[in-house]
Each structure stands twice: as C-alpha cells, then as structure tokens.
Image (cartoon, rainbow, N blue to C red):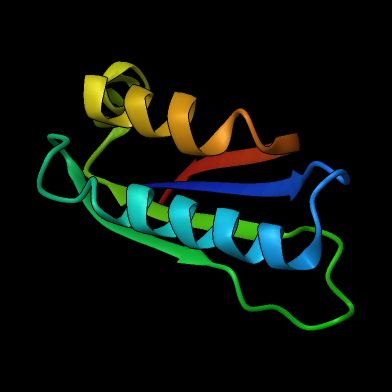
Length: 100
C-alpha cells in the first residue's frame, strides 16, 4: 500500500470566505475520485484545522501500490480535478509518498 499526502497553501488573494468555498470544492473533487481511479482506495481531504496550522488543507490518500500512484497522477479524472479545482487556487504544495 502507498500513502500519498499533500499539504497546500492557498493564494493569499482570496478572502477567508472564498478560501472556505475553494477548499470545499477541492475536498468534493478529490474525494469523488474513489471508484474512478484504479488502485485509489481512500481519499480524505482535511479542511478544518487548528490555528497553529501553517497549511490550508491536506490530502491523505491511499493507493494499492506505486504503480497505482503513477496511474493516478495521469488519470484524466484526477487531472481534471487538479487543473480545475486545485492548481488555479494554490500557492504552494508539499508532498510525501511512502509505502506501508
């Protein structure tokens, strides 16, 4: 199994209300990929955080193996969510992938 974890910081130009709507859209889009992308078994997008956080949201996903992660990266459904709901609004992205 492989964990694919991403932390994003949204662009500063958005108001808190806009950021909340953007994060809801990202959560809905990414969590909706389960069942569409082969090997993607779980997706959790955390948008509620404590004030001590320095990221705006987190993706915690589980895939069957490293090959499934490679396929996920280029799968049309994932690319559509990434290009439409994530990349236009994010200022930074930090990722860690690991086997467990």
